[in-house]
Image 1: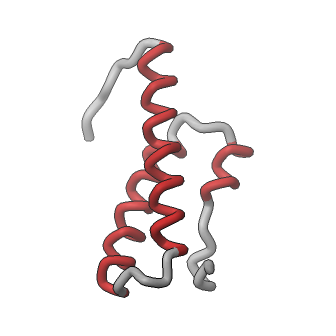
Image 2 (image 1 turned 120 degrees about the vertical axis):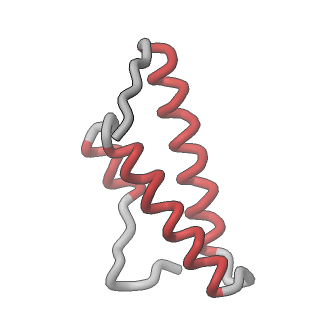
Image 3 (image 1 turned 180 degrees about the vertical axis):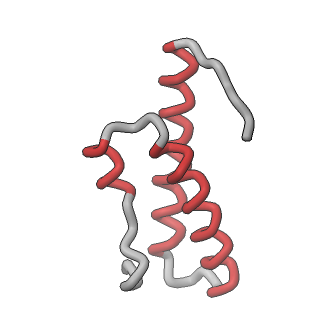
Length: 74
């Protein structure tokens, strides 16, 4: 476990970067042309970045990026 101290501006910047990365991965996961092995790698990375985002995002923002693991999203 590592600790990280951020000021308010750095926290907003990290929030922005994580949101953009999550948005890009969601677009990639909806693309049917992507191979299944690559899709699994993107899903694994999505989970890690989502957990990072969840540490400081409000609950209403988390619901925007939450994915249902039981059913594939199209």
